[in-house]
Length: 325
Image (cartoon, rainbow, N blue to C red; front, side, top):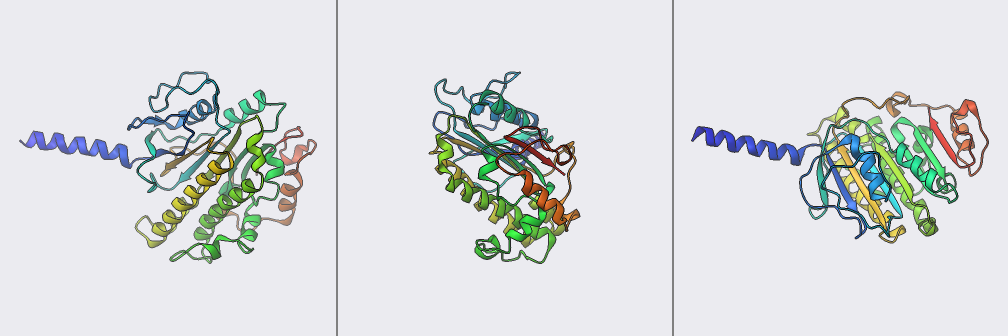
């Protein structure tokens, strides 16, 4: 009897570890991109391959993962948007969407997918935006340089955006969150970026008519700072997760609307990555002040056309820019 009880408890713990661990959630996908129901774990290092396959691209190694069914040979999504949320293992999304356990939560980027887009659609004008606001890490390609030219991306720009009309500081129920605390401001800054990207996409709905697929990749670390500052049992964490869940669902709805339901939107939630991403970066909490020179520099290079500027980190191209402070 005791052994039976122990086995039952062990099985339940295994099940809970799969449900409550880090996760990949698919908020939106076209009818011709099928994610199967089931608790099949996927490794973090395989996420770029998964994104590539959903966009109809080939990968170097077969993705041995039953969660994604074979796609259509005649249709490909017009866009894929992946949002990585650090600081918790899951969000309270509706139960009728597909969610899978995430194993081996190592840092990853969608650089390989962006390179494929650039290679296959060099004669078109795809939109590629990769942004990590808290680390001031930005990569833009193609029409992104035009569409998101005015998107606040440095710490100083985002802080300034929060004081302008349409700020989330006035439109969202902050409750326990404060505009006077650094951790709160970091989190709210990232929510503001989500809202601003949605607003800019709504103004450029013609993007969905371009033959080249678009790629969006965002990494949000604000919730991680909320946990570090207040803890997971705090009202601040509860309010922040509620705000972020709602903001992500709105973002997914907006992206799906712009691309006429021909877009895939995924969210990866991870408490913490097992190792830091090997890129030079700066925390928003470690850099409260950014000089006017840096602000002007990013404004100068985030334009539709530019020439090679070795000191700024720009790639010598008329349509591609990498900013990594």
